[in-house]
Structures are given as C-alpha cells and as structure tokens.
Image (cartoon, rainbow, N blue to C red):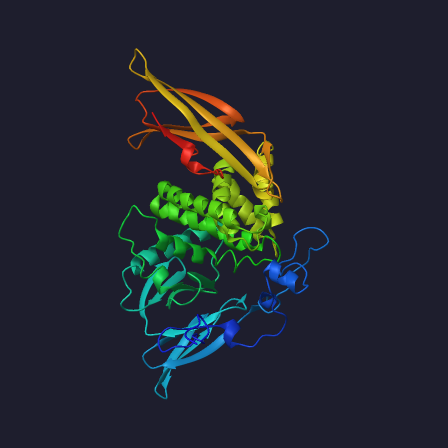
Amino acid sequence: RGFVARQQEDSVIANGTFLLSTRGFPTLGYRGSYELSDPRERRKRGLPGGSAAALEGADAHGAVDSTLDEWVETALTVSTSADQIALAPGNLERTWERGGRRWFRYRTGAPILNRFAISSGRYAVARRQQGHVALELYHHPAHAANVAHMLDGAAAAVDLMERRFGRYPHRQLRIVEIPSYWPMAGFALPEAIYLREDRGFLTDTRDPGRPDLVARRVAHEVAHQWFGHRVHVVDQEGAAVIVESLTKYAELLVVERLRGREHVRQLLEIELDRYLAGRAADSYPEVALYQADRQAYLYYNKAAIVLFGLRDLLGEAAVDHAIRGLMQEPRPTSLALVRHLLAVAKPEQRPLVASWLREVVLYDLRVAATTAHRRTDGRFDVTLRIAAGRSRVDARGTEQPLPLNEPIEIALTAEGKVLDSRKHVLRQGMNVIRVTLETRPSEVTVDPWITRIDRNPVDNGQGF
C-alpha cells in the first residue's frame, strides 16, 4: 500500500517522545473537537451548523468541549531511558535512577488547563532567568545555532507580557524541541512551548534583512501562556480572536522591541499578502473579524493588521487597557473585546473601531501623481495627488462604497531617509496634499506602516 502520512502512532519514539494528554490519558465528558467541522461535510450528513456556537441570537450557547475545560493540578511520575530527560508540567520535585532507568517527579504549583504533554529525549539544556521565571530550553545537542536567540525572544516576551498583561503564574517556562513530522510549527501548553526542529531550531537566521521567524514563533507561543491559558474562552464564534489574534498582536509587540518598527512593517506586509490570498481562495463567505472561527487568514493575518491599526488609531496605552479589561472577565468572548475597545475609543473614533471589527472593509489608497518644484529659497514645494476609497463587503461578496474621512499617514523619503511623515485626513475620491521640504523627495508612500487593509498595496507608493 505504500506510506500514508500520520497513519502510524509516533508519539512515543526512541528519542524525541511527545505524548499529548489527549492521546495518552482517559477523559470524562464530551469532546466537541471530535465533531466534523467542515460545513459541507456536515450538510451531507444532515447535521446542523458547526462545532462553534454562534455569538449572538438564538443559536448562542456555551462551550461544547467539557474534557478540556477543566482546571486541574497534576502530580506526575515519569520514567524514561537512562540517557534521557523526561519533562512534564510542574516543578521538578526529585529525580532518581532505578532498574536502569531515570525517574522524574513533577507537581504543579498552580492550577492548569487539563491539556498538557509528556516529552522525553536526549536533550542538551540551556537556561536563563527572567525575573521570577526560569527559562529552560531542551534541544537536540546538534541543533544549538538558534538557542541563544530563542532565549532572547522568550525573555523579551515574558518581560513584555508581565509588564503589560499580568504576572506569569508558574516558576518555569520550558521550550522543548520536537520532531518535524508534527503538524504544527509550535504548540503552547501549560508551563511549556513545543517547537518543531525545522520551524525554529534549524531555521537560517543569518541574514538580518529577512523576517525574524524564530523570534516571532517563540514570542507567539510564549504569549499563549496569557491568551489561551490564563485567559480561557468559550467555544463560540470568535474564540480564535481572543486566543490567536491577541497572541498575534503580542508577538508583533515583542518583535518590535527586539528588531524595531521597520521589521514589524516587513511582517505586516506578509500578513496583508496572506490575508488577500486567503480571502481570494476561500470558498466560504468572509465574516467580520469578531466572528472569525475556521478562517485562519482572518484571526491570524487580518487580525495582525487590524490590531496594529487600532494601536495607531487609539494609542498603545488605550489598547493595553482594553485588553486588561477583557482579561478580568471570567469567560470572555470577542464581543467583550469589541466592547472594551469601543470603551477606550473617543466618540469620533468609535465608528471606525466598530467598522474594522464588525464589518468586512477594504481600502483603495493610491498615489496618482507627484510633483516637486524648487523654490527660490532652495526648498521644495511638493504636491501629492492621492486617490482614496473605502468599501464594505457583504455576505454575498457585493461591495458597497463607504464614506472616507480618516487621518492616514503619508511618508516622504529620499534615499531611505524620512523627510516628512505625518497623518493627513483623506476623503473619498482625489485628495491634494501640499507640503514644503528642505530636500527633494525621491518617493512617497501612503500608509507606510500598513494600518489599513488595502487590496492593492503596490500602488501605495510612487517616485518623483
């Protein structure tokens, strides 16, 4: 018959065991994650809807997956080969040898969600202390090239998340390398994040001009210790916005701290491209961001742009305040996120906040023409003609023009140096912008930091 991907059981192997609790431990209750999720497959079998409940209306209800919804404390004794280290959630209480094997006793010091993993391997170990959190990185001895960089990213992420979103409740955070055949790039579980060898440890990071995918992945999984583990959500439409979109936002904040805003701009270019490609390929109608459920191009890619756009619009302190408010709710939904963001917005900003979160909105921003004339005093009078438009897309894919009256940044540069970058109010149609500069510009860019979902970003810039 040949080989079939993932047919064999490969959780327990000679070196690099990764055993999820859902595969190795019995559970009581109903596991909604086993339901068919594809709406077409459900319709074929006469089944209603999908596994995620509606946020609003008569179909709204709570979680359907009771097996993963519990907070537990664990005390685990794990035995492994004599030359390996076994890992489990909690504090390592003791280790000993018996019968030619090594034994490890772990006990959690605070409740965790009932989803965890046990791993074992011939690991090399790197350690770093970040405040009260011991960072431990377990990796194949030959895969050490990115270890220091990963610890830098983890330390920066823990520091940022604690300062802005609350204390990490455990003594340690472990980063563990797992084999490349696992279907995820990374996976956050209580007190540990698991990264595939080929999606972090073996990534070539030598070119400083390329996106820093290693720091990005580490920061993302660390942020899940807050969004996904500390903040636990109801299994409803929009749950991914709390678990994944806020994590995506935190990931970019960490990368910005490590590499600067220009590096984040590069990453947002990738997010915009993936969002546009995702919506073009999707056979289902696009929903508003707050309803995102199965469409990863929404709760990952679009969300990154929208949340960074909200930071630009509302200010970083306001967005942080909204997220902290959300975190105080026992079982928040994406509706609560919308409510908290609207609460920190000024009255004149609220329609735009609601539009970005509760509607599908696209922008068309284009540099139509540029001129730069030298004055008698040596300065330059610069004239820009900017075409601007905004539209709403309904459930049938029909576009309806919307009024536009928004402050959007326009940057003028010369050989990579910023000469002038400020917000100008752009309205529907053709806008004429005039500025005076000391130096002749060589290029203009509308929305240089990618705060709007522009369907054709290529025409956002033009030379002189």
